[in-house]
Length: 380
Image 1 (cartoon, helix red, strand yellow):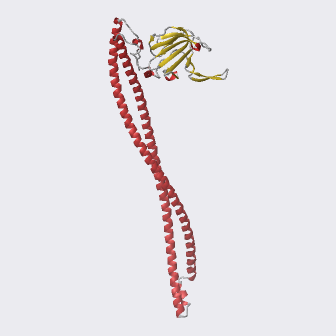
Image 2 (cartoon, helix red, strand yellow):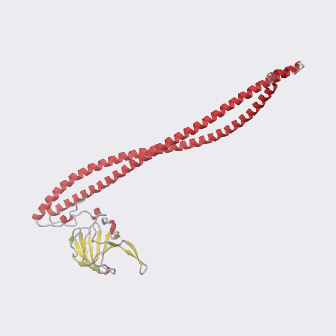
């Protein structure tokens, strides 16, 4: 937490008062140095942890890419297996048709042999009266016998092929299902591990960002304390020279008034007249008589009435950054004054305003109006 000490930065001429302040500032600087060393070590440790986790996440990303490739390969192999499955199924149908035909042929042959009786081919041979016819008939009977054996053998082989085809189909299905299940399990485990690593890395980065912010705030406080010591111990100094650049505080400046934002920076459309006009700052609702404070230290460039701005205070913060405080009721500073951060410079009012009491606040950087909300600290 940054302990801002701008109240100590105001010029003090009473030596009895400045010496204790300087002593306290030096003690605080020693404390800050110890805190900075501790925070620096912690930041280094977090960065190392973050780099290690980043490396692990990179490895996991590579593993995930490899696994995705394996899953894609498995998917393609499965598609190829499905094509093979279709072919085997077609082959199965063909074999079943062949078996049916062969079964029919064998059945007819067995029925024919059964009808001839137990003598079978012998009866066929005895019916021939001539030798040539006998030899021809014998040869014919021998061929029939070999054909019967071949038919039976082919039938047996076809049955065996059919059994093998069916076994191959079941093996393909089982192996593909097992491979797919294993890959899906690995993918889920890898995704879970990757998500955990990512979550952990996010936490580390968030903590590191917070520690870095605290480190920067403490370092800023340390520089402010050194400036304060110089202001207490040096003579003939220019207050504008003993300040840190206002740009160092962009996004963390205090609000100029304790009121609600009623109009933002940018183009505004008037609902009554349907006209557009540019709002170069923001409007903050402040009842008449409330304190108007500076957002940063600087020199008063203007403190007087100015057209539609009413009573206006303009403060130069250095580095070509100036701030406007308009529609004030009573001005408490004059041109040439040096004012510290959060010093009361006016009381709120409605001078020059057509919409009642409010504070119109602008910040111009190198003469160009910028959205004050980018300079002010977020409202709690």
